[in-house]
Image (cartoon, rainbow, N blue to C red; front, side, top):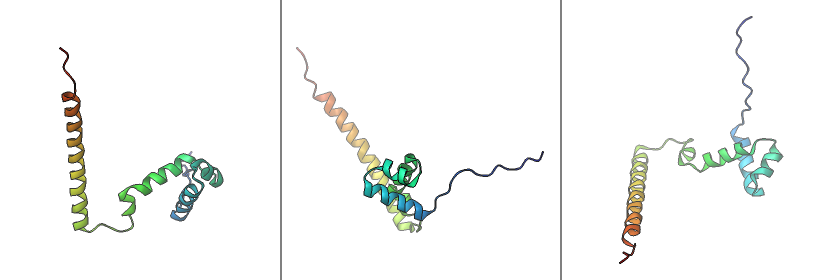
Length: 102
């Protein structure tokens, strides 16, 4: 017997189908109903919704220019630093707000 590659059984969805599925899920306010109407797994719609919300997905069609990419990196670093500072302040408040027992 020859080793023939197995055909790919995964369904491939084009961008138009994905956009329609996301629009239907948004209109119906239920991913389950949209998935049933389109005969696909609800998890797939959730994955597409999550991917549509990421900034990378928004920029897939167009490449970011270097200035915008640098600014995006700086803003993300600033957000991480501010989140760390906020965590430190929350811990400090928890430590210093404890009333000593006499």
